[in-house]
Image (cartoon, rainbow, N blue to C red; front, side, top):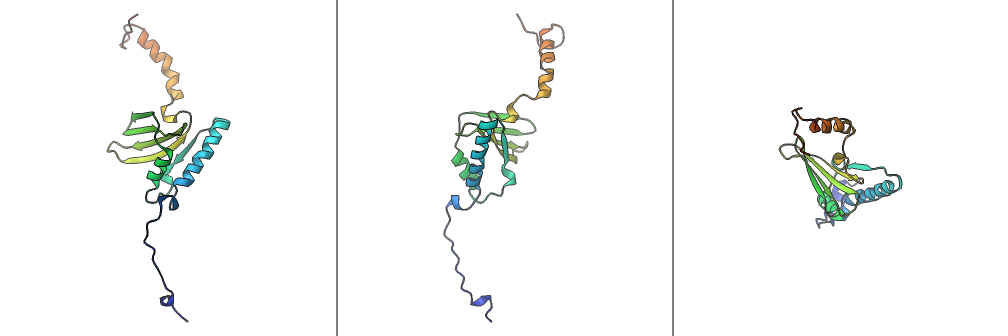
Amino acid sequence: MLGLEGIPVQIDSRPQPIHERGNALPIVHEVRHALERLIATGEGTQIDLNAIPFGPGDEERLTTLLGTGEVSATIEALGPTRIQETAIPGVWLVDYRNAEGQRLALHIEIATIPGILAAQSEDLATAIATLDARLRPGQGAPRLES
């Protein structure tokens, strides 16, 4: 009986095209299904890219496939969060970083507007009271001139 030594092994060290080795294309297909759901039901989807194993070049391939849109925003809360519209309407890249600039999370959000940019219902509950306080002189809030 022959051991493993008798089996010829050949190593192929040629570089493989990026689209053949990773998760970029499956994620784009998932984005497509999420867009269909958004259009049909209004239901948004968030894809946590940190939870998906990326191979070499996957993130770059994914961002190339999605392209870059015209809208971007940065939120400063415990570190910068950058929201970038992709070239696909309704598809957003949301990159969360800590105060040192290290990535905490990277999401693709399929929505009419990213949830992080929408006013929170808790904040809306106090909005009128906040505005009323600003309209009343002598309350210590900035006074609006009429």
